[in-house]
Image (cartoon, rainbow, N blue to C red; front, side, top):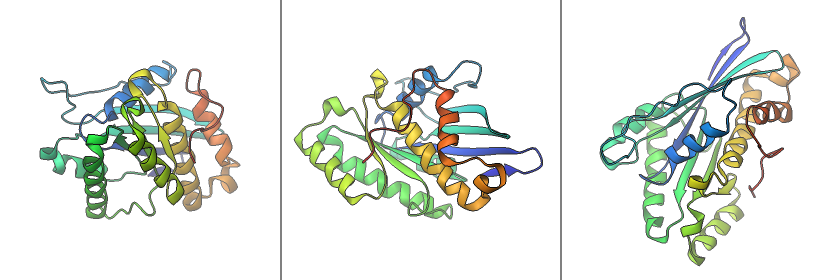
Amino acid sequence: MQFNTGQRELTLKIVYYGPGLSGKTTNLRALYQRIRPDLRGHLMTLDTADDRTLFFDTLPLIFRAGNLKVKLKLFTVPGQVMHNSTRRIVLQGADAIAFIADSQPSKRQENYKYWLNMVENLKANGLSIETLPNVVQWNKKDLGDDSTVEAIDKMRKENKQPVFEAVAVRGEGVVETFLGLVDLTFEQIDKHYLLSDKLGLDRRQFVEEVRRCLVDAPSMPVGAA
C-alpha cells in the first residue's frame, strides 16, 4: 500500500492467485473489457506457446474518489508449479488477494494445494492470509457437480471470506468478485489511514466510485455469503 498524503494519491496492489488454468487471466481480461476505456491502462500479458500466462498481467485502473486519486494495480501469478519463485515475488506488497479456484471436481486437490502454497508464499513476504483482505471465486461453475456445491456451501458456512461463483469466459461473476474484494480492501486501509475521518470518504462511497468506472456493473457487490 502506498499513500502519498501530499498528493493525496493511494496505490493498491491486488493479486489474483490460483492453480494453472483456473481462470486468473480470463478474469482480468473480462474485467478489462468492463472498465471505461478512459480510465484503464494497458493490459500486459506474457504468454508461452501453449497460451498459459508465464509471468503476470498488470491492469492499472485510475480514478478519483472524493479528493483522493486512487490507482488499483491488478496482477495475476503464473499457475505452473515451476514458477513458484515468481509467484512469491508477485505477492510482495500485496494489499488484497482474489483466490481463483477451479470448480471441476478433478481439480479439488489442486485448489487446496495452491491455497497452501499461497499461504506459504505470503508468510515468506511477511504477510498473513488471516489479516489480508481476500475473497474466493469458484470459477467454471458450469463444470462443477454436486460435490462442488457442497464444497462451496461448506466454505460459506465457515464465513472466513466472501465466496463467489463465476464463469469468467462468459464474464459472469467477474465484476462481483472484484467489487467484493475492493469493498474488503477499503475496510482494511481505512483502519490504517482513517480515510473516512480525514477525507470524509466512507466504504460505500469508495466502492461506488469503483463501480462507476465499470460498464453495466451491479450497484453493490452481490453473490457473497
